[in-house]
Length: 254
Ligand SMILES: *[C@@H]1O[C@H](CO)[C@@H](O)[C@H](O)[C@H]1NC(C)=O
Ligand SMILES: *[C@@H]1O[C@H](CO)[C@@H](O)[C@H](O)[C@H]1NC(C)=O
Ligand SMILES: *[C@@H]1O[C@H](CO)[C@@H](O)[C@H](O)[C@H]1NC(C)=O
Ligand SMILES: *[C@@H]1O[C@H](CO)[C@@H](O)[C@H](O)[C@H]1NC(C)=O
Ligand SMILES: *[C@@H]1O[C@H](CO)[C@@H](O)[C@H](O)[C@H]1NC(C)=O
Image 1 (cartoon, rainbow, N blue to C red):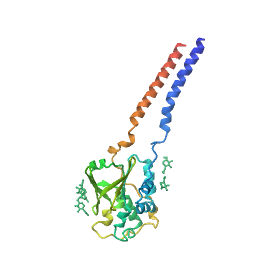
Image 2: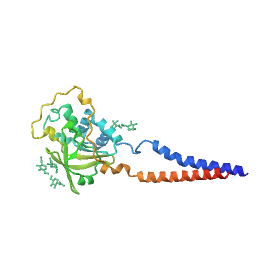
Image 3: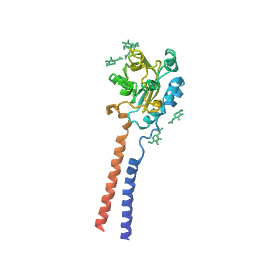
Image 4: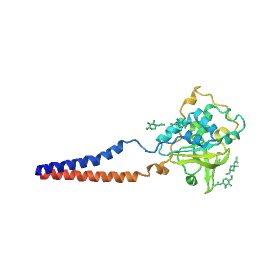
């Protein structure tokens, strides 16, 4: 009778140990964030007035790069999406005069390598890096100033303001603008430079490099529930520890 009781007790201690330890092991194996990554072209399509921008995103393959970046990034992305009307305001032939590489630069110039709410624009220091801020693309930056009612964007060639928010949930913010952001390195004071001879005719297929990664000081949003997780893990380890103590007590007594 006593030994049956011992075995029952041992069994319960063992199960307690396994049961409480298993979930924390499973947690470390599980893939990253649970929220599905956002799809930039899907958001723009829903907006209904961004067909030129979508066409350029796809033809330059920047859409693929951005969607996969969103999948992996802890900083998120911010996109300024010019309306079709904004493209129509450009002098005729502006886009066609650009080389393939310059079109990639133009599109990357509309993307910031982190997630910004409109409120966060109030605390950014200028100039702000874009996805086109690598040396490969002429160090294109934006100046962004904001008040409670307005966010102004300046490229040094054009000024504009955010007119509408299409998406503002981490990791992707998309803001509508009525003017195409023309980078200074392409459209600045000097006359448009003749296109440098491409090293290979297929250079456009090369995945455009990303901007240098910004400091991690503002990257809080991704980790908002890590406190809860670690508390839960601590509780699991505590109960595993109690199970271990119970087991060692049993072995010592019998
Ligand atoms: C993103 O959305 C577009 C349009 O809705 C769709 O064609 C594409 O397959 C989507 N891409 C991913 C990676 O889900
Ligand atoms: C997102 O990441 C997961 C796992 O890391 C991968 O299986 C999936 O194919 C990725 N999706 C895209 C659109 O890159
Ligand atoms: C934004 O630009 C407008 C002029 O277009 C100006 O009146 C306003 O003060 C600017 N606001 C900020 C916060 O820079
Ligand atoms: C952007 O801001 C920086 C720092 O305030 C300033 O030096 C620069 O002239 C500005 N550029 C433009 C194009 O407004
Ligand atoms: C853009 O705004 C700045 C002041 O914020 C001004 O100095 C500049 O002339 C403006 N540029 C254009 C092209 O309107």
